[in-house]
Image (cartoon, rainbow, N blue to C red):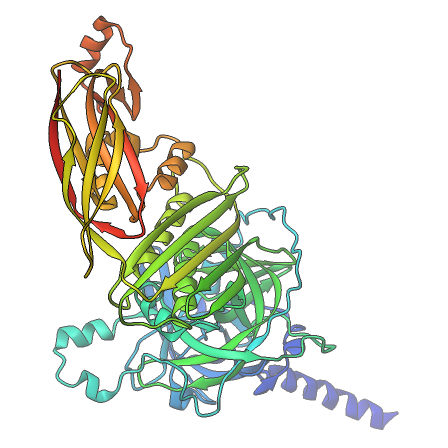
Length: 612
């Protein structure tokens, strides 16, 4: 009995000492899940304090790194504080702060202080900034948006990208010491400023050229593109990865034949709510992005910016908020994604089917990137080519799809025709009239290795004087590139109500000039006041292979906000003609004939005629 009494205090002391130790270097996610979070307020943090942080360096196991407090930056941004720390341990001695560590929870005395979120490039030591956890909680846990009425209808498994051991195929924006030799002090100061830790954008199935063309867009949001390939990952293991503090988390942007996701770290978990990153992703406020667990393959060291290479493994919820203090997600809820189909017909016929986030900022840019990748993977980059593009967008609010099609010619590798198709999509998703929900995006691209262009050389009419109701024959001379001239005859009908004594202008023109005439002659029609007008404007875009012949007809009446009023009483017409508000203009009518041709037309020619 005495022996038992002697050992009991020793046993209690042993457990007390053991409990004071930080978690081991290679702690499983499920052991970490059992730890109850205690919070340390920023006012308790003092220089010299030491602690630890959690993140994933390899696989899905949470690792521990060392932390030393250097100081507290009060009000470093408006109404925001930051804890300055030095981190060490594991690979950090070689890599410094790693892109993908954003959100790593920082602990002092086993109490959560905040999220690793900011850093400097080109520093010799791994020094970083921590956003206090109370700022994240007060910003992101209040007024959480309600769950959207959506249930995923497809499997949520994801094939992981695999990375080679050598890493030679990976494209990084690393900078060597020789690159910065000779920079002045101002340039160096700009490079050394405190910025959010970059987030790796892991992509697969995308052409490197398309990725590089989108680099300015990604850089503006602090995203660091990393390429990978497909990898078969087992998602049916008994202990699936879960989102706990220190675990890797991914925001999914594209899923399917093309993949893209942004990887960061979980900071805090409260019930079914997840806080991560410690800095904004896109800073869009309320958002709706799929949230997934992630697997880390390795860390690519760089003198400018080391990066985690990983990918999503399983969708477990949705990201509902994206604010200055970080992102907030909800477990068990699922984001709506828009099916997208891209078909390329050229040297060979290929199709791509994927889902894309329903986000008005990201969607047009991601569709453009996917389209560029689709053509660059099979078609040549340089040389003459004609590109036929047809975009079809199905909206929930409309029975028939919005269809835009056109044909372009190219002499370089810019692929500007695809940007012309992304613009209507952006106009629809960012319209000012009402929120729209896209059901499907369908994009067909046909590439021909010939340059079929023709110039409008001259225009001739069969009579210089016409009467109301007459038929006018317009002869247009077209000169194909490296070909012989030929003539296209267009028959035009002069309206019965044409004003006698007036002068009419007959113009044969290409799509660019015709669109300019539209804007100049009746600009109100091209400043929509509702969604239907906007969609009509988008679908009415002039096509480059149409020969357009226009006759401008002055008429009695006026236009107001794009609508014509030809039958106003004289008194009202007099008053409105001197209106002191915008949107009022003269009324014109126009006879327009569009004739399809096998050529992309360039130029314009005009001739005046008179009415008897």
